[in-house]
Image 1: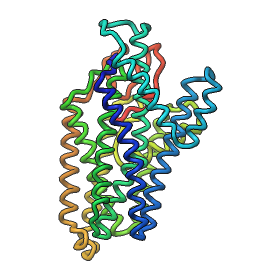
Image 2 (image 1 turned 60 degrees about the vertical axis):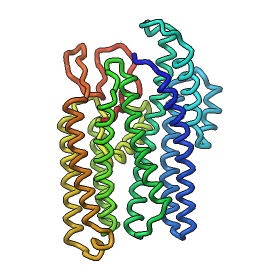
Image 3 (image 1 turned 90 degrees about the horizontal axis):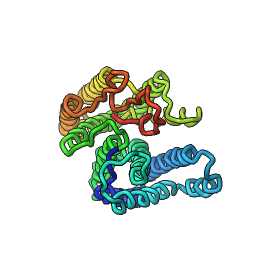
Length: 378
């Protein structure tokens, strides 16, 4: 098992600061929209914030409930109360700071020890708690940050009113997505004992692959929304339905209860609107090829529709610049995707002599399968 280092602890502190700042920025942007009389966009920004917070609180509480499994009935009452007031993430950060401090600063570097020894148990606790936080950040990224980024770009193009807070919100959204992606991959490598740690170059390649493909897709959806909000809604609902149907076909087993599993699959459908990840322990080559081939065709179709449909809108939003950025982002994103899966995507040779992707769970092991191995982003 990889170790929880002092650098991990420092980044954990930074993550807490970013999380608190993100809350403040959401209300700041919403207040600016209210001040300008754009009440719909203000309410929409807050709705994204409320939706992501509600979903993450639900998952966080159920994880506490499953982990403690009746061993701390009294504590579950106040844990529920804290989550009811949407502060559950701060409890998780408190545990992360507690175990992270012990793992990073209070242990002797005595070499390799077995997993039953106290030092290794503390390391596992620190990594597991941080992993749960990063899993929740993935939910937040695609339920709040990415949709807000889409709204900000759309408003910028629709009203052609360039304000400092709009650019600030867009930059913060991009940073939020970037940190979420990298932190998630770091947690992946640390949580699975058969994976090597993600080094600097693979981190950058993975980061640019996700960031550029998501940017291209958000710009495309913003363009089609400018032309027709109804068409944009239809496209998004259709794609979400396809993603949700795929999760049903995969028979995911992330949650212990049937209700939570369907909530998970609903969230997965939303995430699949923006990026690909494998939700089941299978090879991803065919799935990811189909996914990005579909996104490429839809993006090209949107650009062609914008080119031949409404010249007035094209002139207003400078379609040449936006479409150029869309194409460049898509092409570069696919190049980084190919490079990552060609040179940096890890595979594992298990006891059954079968190659698996990052998401795989080893069927022959007696180890308990953790949450993170049921939800591994690609």
